[in-house]
Length: 225
Image (tube, rainbow, N blue to C red):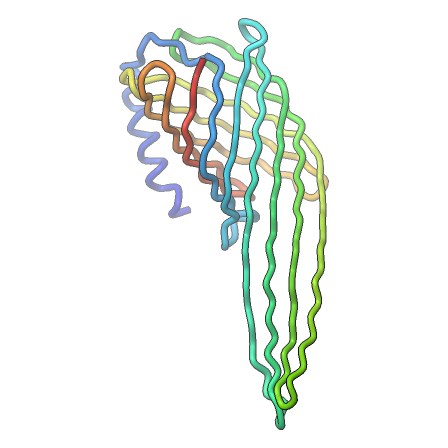
């Protein structure tokens, strides 16, 4: 909860000045990429990596949308066990790789040249790969036991989202949204907040978050065309 307080303050400040909305359209095609931190089940540690997202208009109101996350959690632990006449050291190192892909169709409801509502329905694919290395080392005499395992799990489902986006002060965009994700393993709702600073007519820097069973924090650079 504490991680989102500053983000909420920024969004509230921008929303309070909505009367200063500029006249430049925000409903253009775009591609965005950047750093992602994902807290699955809202627990530490976070999975760190990157994301790529984009939108392509296919008519005045309908568009194709897609998003991809590739993140990882690395963990390591050990313990020393006293066996009396000798010691045993247990070591465990593990890598969890998470890949998430969502693609679908969206609908834009234009309110003005600088604000719109969006509605999206997407296919969602979640994949987790876990590689672990467990070893036991004995002394007096030296003896080593080692075990390497690999596991893979995949779930598919759907996402429904709705959001509102607007431009303010000629240099900022803000967006708020709500979504519902359903996959084989879990189902839940989440909220989205995003604030962007525009760098000219095409480039922008964005800070975004998603809050729900899975918490996400993204910092990226986008290009509109």
